[in-house]
Image 1 (cartoon, rainbow, N blue to C red):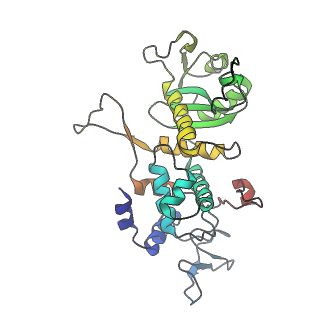
Image 2: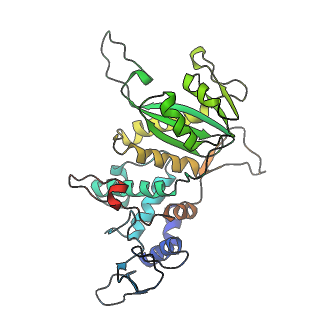
Image 3: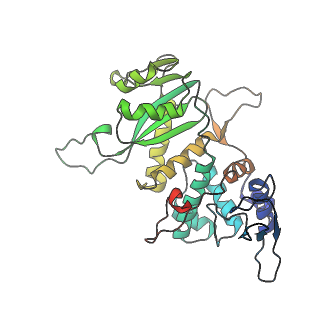
Length: 329
């Protein structure tokens, strides 16, 4: 589906609103304040389209109330268009380019982008553990320091770059977590939260992984220090590929990812990686070189709109955005 076909699917605001209501209120219209199912539409001259009043608490609400789209002044079509552009991009879209494409300011596009990342975070299936073959790796996200004659700069863990733990299920989902070190005490509880104990872990030679791997079905590793990257079916290149994609997004799209909002960019990358399908030949067989495409647009939109009630993003006093938990309070 391209933008033209997407517009044919959503020709006006009423069609956009009806689609969102069918997903968020799939079990019937519910008040976001008291969660009762009894409400009625308000159709007065001053009532905006899609406004309802709860029969219990008398709260007035729309389908976007108490969601990342709360109190939006933007047309719903712009939201759907931006969600399509971000989810179908290979590595993301900067706020400058997003604003230019849909016709809003950079500041509005910046908040809109983070709100869409919140929709992607709400969908994250954290209740499902990674299983099968799970690859682990750490990524140190950041650019090279400026050249200084006669100075050799440290790399990886020897720098002050932000470390990220990547757990990638081979052929499946991926999970990430910001970490302060690659020690066992910090990595083990995160891996236990991400990975099923019956999984086969594949890592590099980090000593922490060898101790952690004793608690899982099996553990194999490759030794990068001697240029060993693949040994038969043993490698952690999938996790490293996800880390490389993050680096390319930082360099070519966003240029800088704030530490304060880095977890949002990680969830965006996770969402895009998880919700893709492998391209097959016309005969139904896998091609020699694996290729992936995003899921159908309507399916991606449906996934993002599910379970978003209760999540809010609000402007802070200094022009930033409040964290989700702060906004809920």
